Length: 188
Image (tube, rainbow, N blue to C red):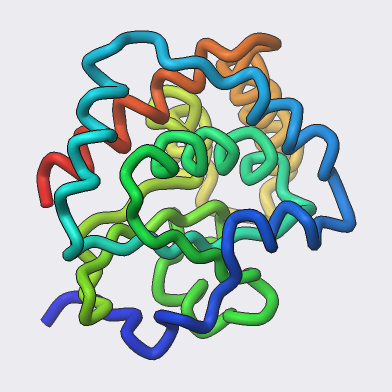
């Protein structure tokens, strides 16, 4: 049997409650959201077409201190806003049991965006970053299995720097998120 978050449905907060309750990075979060634009009409039309489906829900595991949440969740919120899909946010520290069901490369990486059915069955998962941006961390984890190695921290720093370079200063990475979310939702 696949993963299920039925016990978490209705336990989260709304996107607006998440934004309003942010004690860290709220301005940056709002800034990334305000800079979001649809790169093409086909993507926008796809997300609008989901309004006809009442069988999908979105649960996002997140926290305001996380840089990936600050950059990526505003895009997820904007894209899903057009779908009419119910979206709720679980604050990671308040839902560690759920977080530990959706580890990335063995670690607690957020955001975790779950597309679920009305019964909480997980149909798809996205996060914590667009695939292209995540590639340096995947390569790092594969090449650096010994956390005690002399060059572990140095290599981790290099991977994080490459992730930052791949995000870039602008909003081009946001289209990667839209594209990956579209593919995920289209597959369920």
